[in-house]
Length: 173
Image 1: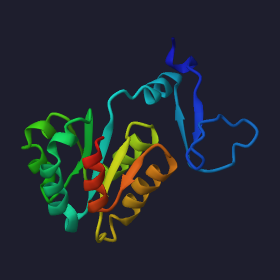
Image 2 (image 1 turned 180 degrees about the vertical axis):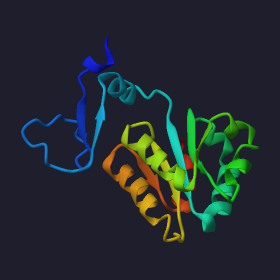
Image 3 (image 1 turned 90 degrees about the vertical axis):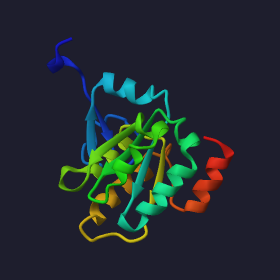
Image 4 (image 1 turned 45 degrees about the vertical axis):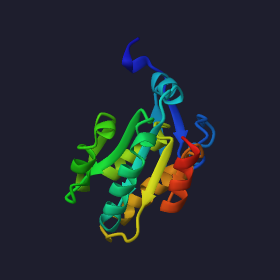
């Protein structure tokens, strides 16, 4: 099929309904356009995906959590995180069961958090560990987008408390 002739659907990001709107195109400014092929791929996500979101103050907590729960996390088909100046991504790459599933988005102006938010909005992220204690002002808008994307996609489980995350890991993924 010619790419120019593929019908596209407009997904409203505020409601997350995915219903094309022809009458009320102005229901919200936050929209994403997907092809039928992308929509099928979004809904056929067979292996679970988890995102590891952390700030500078929480990187050590996240690293130890990953070490403590390496076996459980290795059950995910893909682990999303960001590369950053703090080198946690490099440490995670040294954990055998994690490194082969790790997908690092470039941090900072290249949009690491935005890449994870996009995956979440497209239905390609099932769970999110969100360990953020203090936020640098420059990262605050990006983190709002990530957290907001998980709130829009009602199927995403968000764990913000390390004790809750540990309890959840004990129960099994």
